[in-house]
Every structure is written in structure tokens, then in C-alpha cells.
Image 1 (cartoon, rainbow, N blue to C red):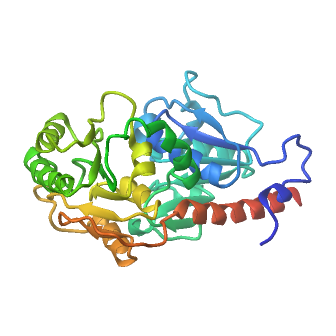
Image 2: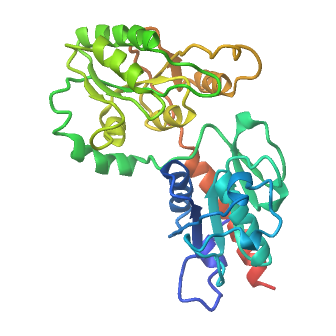
Image 3: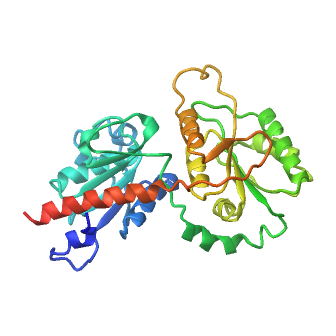
Amino acid sequence: MNETVAEAAGDRLSPHPLPSCWVIGDGRPGLENQSLGLAEAMGLEPVLKRVVLRKPWRIASPYVTAFKRFAFSGSGASLEAPWPDIAIATGRPGALPLIYLREASEGRTFTVQIQDPVVRRGSFDRIVVPWHDGVTGDNIVTMDGSLHIITPARLAAEAPRWADAFAAIPRPRVAVAIGGVNSRYDLRPEDMTVLGAQLAALAAQGFGLLVSGSRRTGEANMAALTEALAGSGAYIYDGQNGANPYLGMLAHADAFVVTCDSINMITEAASTGRPVHIARLPFRRGREGGRNKFGEFVRRLEGSGRVRMFDGRIESWTYEPLREMERVAHILREALTVHLRNLYSR
């Protein structure tokens, strides 16, 4: 389809050349950034609407949708006409507002839900989910990994900000991204001691280390890792103090070591086209069996040549960067074009 989104909307009596776009958020950067990144990749100029849900909707969205016009607190952004051409939200907190917008606009607002809402899937124009969720349907768009805001242009702009901070770190540089406990995996100080010893050996071989923990890593685990890396010259961010160097690490790294528990961090590292090594974590007690979406995701990327399991060595290889944002944005641009063309040709 050659027609652009803007062309499809061009006959409207509107001062704006682009379709209007709302991103529905609740202040959580991890969710909002996925929606904002998708809007940006679609060539849109989104307005961020931070919505505050009242109880019980705040707890039960989107399971409880009755009387949803009363669900929105006045302390957050209002959802009132004129309705946007498209609205995007990520996660369950944004699902109820999207359902409301689609109904209140009588279908004029094209709604895109990122992440499986689990229920009421037919209440959205499109739902964007990882393939490993196993969700199918006419309105489902599947992807490898997760959506994010990492682009070559953004990393190129970020690199100079961290040049001085990383100046003492030799090349080749290995960025190490540590996750933590989740529904499947555990993380203990003894695990960090083992990983730290492997990383210290890399430093002894001449590799520079850029190490970052996350909110899930925990103080005890970071302390164990820091102790294991004493004398290695590593740049270590504990996830708490100072500016977060994560984007700078992505920009400056020649290779990556990422723990297996974080689909987001693995996806972001694999978007760079540089070698990504996956560090194993132990399973939580009682979670060894059953379906493991994290493991399935890693095996899929391993099969495509994008990642390899970390065994203490840093290897060098090339692959096509994982940039699902571009592919998903293209699919949704075409769907929005059709929606607007049908809407304004009535």
C-alpha cells in the first residue's frame, strides 16, 4: 500500500497534517516508553495522557469495565472529545482507557494495546504481543521480544554524554546488564560471585567492563558483584545513585553480557547488532518445569544467530539487528491508513 497515513487523513478539515495521537500512561517509564517509541516509529507526534484510575478499576483493569466512565480520577489527564485518530497504551493499566476511548469515539479512535490484556481482546483494534505469549487472532500483531525506544540515532546522540565517564574503560568494552528475581528465575549473592569471577577474568584479558544493576537486582547481589570485581577497573552502576548510564552503555559497548531473566534488556542489546551473550540464572524453587517463555525467547534468538550463551568467553560474530519496532510500526501504519481512509470516505 503506497498511501501514507497522512494522505489518508489529508481530506479532513483539520489544521494538523498528521493524525492526532494520544499515548495513555500512568507515569511508569517502562510502559510509557514502549508506547511513545511506537508512536515515534509510526511518524506520529503523540500527546502523553497520564490517566489515574479510581478503585476498583485501578486494581482490576481491564477485568472490570462496568461504569468505566466513572473510572478516571480528576487528578489525572481527562479523556474528552475531540477524540484522537489513534491511541496507544502499554500494559493492563492502559487497557481500560483504550476500551473507553474506542467506545466513546464510536470507533473513530484506532486503539493499539501493547502487551496481552488477557481478557476483552476484541475490544482493541490491534494488540501487539510477543510471539511466545501464544496469542492469535485477526487483531493480533506478534513480535520477537519487546518494543523499546532504542534506535541508532538515539544511541549516537547519547554516546558523547558518556564519553568522559567511560574514558578510563579500555576497549573492547563489554556492557553487563543484570536483572534479578522474577516469576521464573532467582538471583543470589553466590550467583553474582560466580558471574563476577568470570567478568574479572575478562578484565584481566584486557576487556573493559561497563556494569549496571537494575531495580530487581538488590543491594546484596550488587554488593557481591562489586566485591568480585574489585581491582578490575570496571565501571559499576548500582541502579540507585547518579544518572543511569544504560543508554550510554548500549552506545559504547562492543559486546554484551545480559542475564537471561530480562526480555527487554536482551531485546535492546540485540537491536545494536553487536554480540550478545546470555548469562544463566538459577530457577526459583518449584519453577524448574512447565513452559518457560524466557527460555523460549532466548532459544529463538539463539537460533537466529543473535545471541549465544555466556561461558566466560566473549565471542565475535555478526547478525541482522533485532529491530521489531520498525516492522511493527510499518504494520500499524498500514492498518491506521486503512482505518482513516474508510472513516473519512463515508
